[in-house]
Length: 347
Image 1 (cartoon, rainbow, N blue to C red):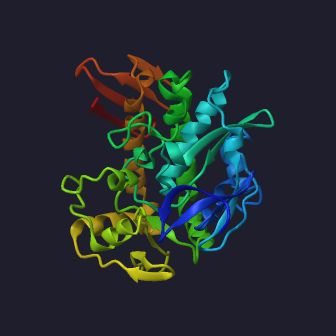
Image 2 (cartoon, rainbow, N blue to C red):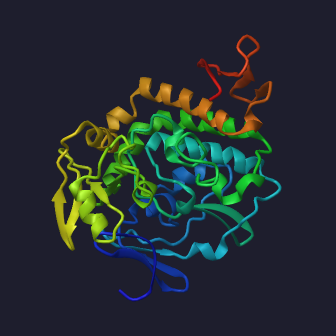
């Protein structure tokens, strides 16, 4: 494969390569990018109706892809380092994007996997690497879009683009966007997940046993996974970042490449591996279960508010919520909506 290589190496030297000045080859499925961001996406009508701004997603030309290869445009040519001044709708849509990714289990949206661009005088968001869906998020902060105990501000997918200079102009709009978006998606979540599953038949869904940083700066004794698995060491010794995946099927398996072109199964023989794998293969019924979603919305809303001081005023009100620092217990945030009331101390 000709072209300059970029990014991490997986599967015995497979890397992203720039084919032309405006096109990148990816040695993996780009079906998720096609579904969420392509101008020809079968979900285009749903996405256009979900976001206020018609340009929130750039909708570039992305092919439907094969299981282990695809091409995407070089959108970094249009990278933007400053947010538009008028961004009330943008902040609302960012809240709705958090809702969508959280409920659909789309994760790993850290700084290197996200991009904000200006194209044709329009401000748009692009996810450069969409590889994981159906993840059993405990909180929307598992998406890595916003800072949390898992990821700092500089490394998170959104804030990392703009650094410390970013502040929310309208934090109430962002929270309203999240809460309204979550309830809107919840009503059709099961059908969306089933269609997403159908769209991904035959395409690998990545399973993160560890984050990339845990391989680059290893501290395996302190990681819940413990020492590296033999399958991880095999890939590390080949000069790769270990890559595991599964397919959406009746009896999913945890897979990896043990040699070029040769797929092997990683046995799930310890609790840590089982936990990560089970998070990756949650069923559509499990992901859309009402009690789970209700708890996920409450937890994410509070964690979202914890992430930025702009939310932590004495009282913040929106169309769908009231958020305040309680007088009874200083340092505790209390969120009230028409459906629930939840409180927790600031971390």
